Image (cartoon, rainbow, N blue to C red; front, side, top):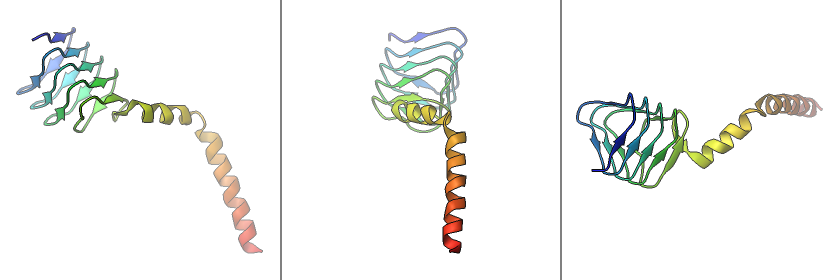
Length: 116
């Protein structure tokens, strides 16, 4: 009832898709997964089998869902995580080389202080 499937969506055996759910192209849903109502599943999303996805869920494109999703969650990434957490992770990735260098420098300074 009101479900919209894009091109090249794979839905495996025993999957239940709730009403008014939209699934974009190249998404794949493994067997025996239960998807609630009023969800948006982006393109190239992969969902493992035998899990439940609640109602009103949004899953961003190219996300990999590997565990139960509660009502109203907005997920992104692989593995799929809450979108605000993923935004913080993504924002920090560009700074990792500087952070690693800073930690190495601090470890060297600490080692010198401990020798004194």
